Amino acid sequence: MTAVFLCALLMLCTASPVLADEITAPQFTDEAAVYETYSEAVISADYNAPSETDTGESEEALNYVLLGDSIAKGSGIVNYEEACYGRIIADTNGYNYVNYGVDGLKSSELREMLNRQDVMASIENADIVNITIGGNNYLHGNIPLLLLGVLLHIDPIIDTVLDAYYDDLCAIIGKIHEASPDAVILLQTLYNPSTGLLRPLLQYGADKLNERIFQYDKEHPGVVTIVDIAAELNGKGYCFAFIHPTARGNVEIAKILLKVLYDMGLGKSTEPVIKVQGRNTIELLPAYIFNPLKMIPFI
Image (tube, rainbow, N blue to C red; front, side):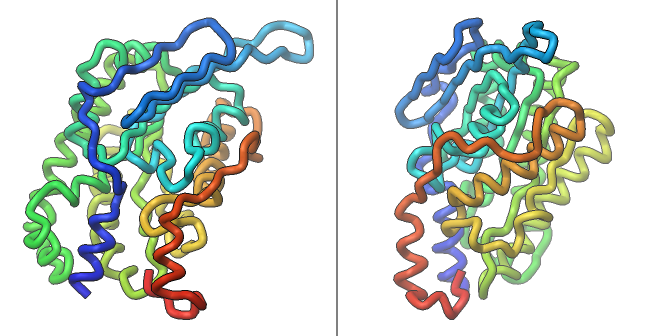
């Protein structure tokens, strides 16, 4: 069990981390249809022309910034720039859109990224800042010791990792809120992609991290809006390729966020606009190798 869990854990946001100082970030401009792709840490920026109201008056598009790890980036699909959930949300609501998702990013690196003037300029102009971070924090400590803590539910071992995560989370959100006090900050919970034998093991770790997310909301009321992705997607294995959301998973995450935004008066629809269909990565292949008939829920 330990070996299988370690294998699954090591696949979390699989690509190697990219440090914040390697990223060249785009800025919001007034130009329409600008699109740039960067190698390694892919940062996609899209600028939609303002929509028009029924009266013919121009309506200024909202600025939407997505921050986080490979979940935000859309690493479960090949064409993530065109089909990740951030792109779907932007296309549905006509947002100006910047995606800073980086494979392997942990909370301390996101905290460091906020020291960049160009990144902060995007945040200062943002109407909506969407954050998903934390899963990779489990990968950057003493993995054997952390595994022991998860297996045996030894909270002090896990809490060492999560205490550092919470300190980063407070600093990240605090800096964003200070830079853009009127921006809506959406903070996603961490889902459990497993539906089989590993589910209870992975669930314990995810629950402990999500406790810190809700702790932040309790201690800082009104600063963030928690978007409970975990509550909606846990147990829905068809949404994931091992750790990452598939094309379908990205659509499902987009639906959850679109409803939140619509209910807040910041969205046009709860039905996602899919301009480009996502294509799943080869991560799906091991699921068929280990379980060709999909009869035994290994993952």
